[in-house]
Image (cartoon, rainbow, N blue to C red):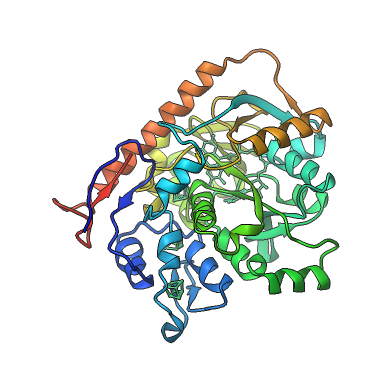
Length: 394
Ligand SMILES: Cc1cc2nc3c(=O)[nH]c(=O)nc-3n(C[C@H](O)[C@H](O)[C@H](O)COP(=O)(O)OP(=O)(O)OC[C@H]3O[C@@H](n4cnc5c(N)ncnc54)[C@H](O)[C@@H]3O)c2cc1C
Ligand code: SF4
Ligand code: SF4
Ligand code: SF4
């Protein structure tokens, strides 16, 4: 067994005794309470037509048919908690501590009133995707949308209307990548979708996701496995945590803050967790207080600024009504420049300071990392993780 440390790493490192299989994920990640339900493992198994895995009723990956498992280890390698190919991903993205490589950072907002009304912050995500779609850079975007019964579901939006409908942040769980894997991960499904229901061929997808989801996609790309080949652009959300909706809307929790479920108009996360009431009043809940209802896996997670996305976004560091846009790649820079030149998105010209924004984002990344370390300490026994391998944080 290898071991070693690298304090510059975001995320955790489990040193390798290859080959690994889903049994190892069950033991080292899922049973250890580290699974953020990103859906990456199920996606990769279904994308490669193996079909050994599925999601259970709670959204955790489980064997659908153990007999089909080839012990290929792909599910293990794409999982954002094993860091199997992290060095490769870091090298591709020229990663540096503490919030990753970035070429630009600024507050911006959509120029579209409807988008601004529906969006969480400045609507940059929605307007950027609308522009990319209309300009033919992408055929569709995996976003989170309303489905029957008001539940959220990952969809591939192929029109401006669908993108508008999906605007806003959804802090509940969403096994986003499973959708990619099931429907858009292999050529057969893509062609079937393209010929039956979509107006265009879906060869070029953008994906919006939390850091764990984007990390799983980058792991797939580093391993050159489907469905990552058709994901040509990623928009990464900053992420302090996500919630099980029942906990978020738990009566006892809301009562502590003098709020009832019916009063809430919208939610947002910036420096604090912010509930906006129907009356317009804002209730600011400090981040430490929200920990009691966050998912266990999120408390043990150390990703924050979505270091491997083309463009990372959040509300943190920007005035209300603006999105903080952290551009990380050349492609990200080109797409933002195109949206700005076509007046779909506008940069905030005055009243902000880049260094202050960076400092704040770094501070939150470091707070999240410390929190992750604290919670991880519970599962880190002296000398190693539950399976005896070493887990590090960075
Ligand atoms: C779980 C979660 C935690 C977050 N934590 C923070 C934080 O701690 N600090 C911070 O500054 N910002 C955080 N954000 C990001 C912030 O809430 C905004 O999404 C971001 O600033 C973009 O705003 P916008 O107005 O440009 O996006 P919009 O134009 O409103 O578009 C948002 C897009 O994100 C998609 N989306 C929404 N929810 C999800 C989801 N759960 N998974 C994948 N895609 C989704 C929507 O479908 C839509 O396409 C978080 C977002 C989420 C979903
Ligand atoms: S076949 Fe491969 S990807 Fe699927 S469960 Fe088994 S080890 Fe994981
Ligand atoms: S890949 Fe995602 S869903 Fe699968 S075990 Fe890892 S965190 Fe959980
Ligand atoms: S905190 Fe965010 S990135 Fe980490 S597991 Fe939870 S949803 Fe994923």
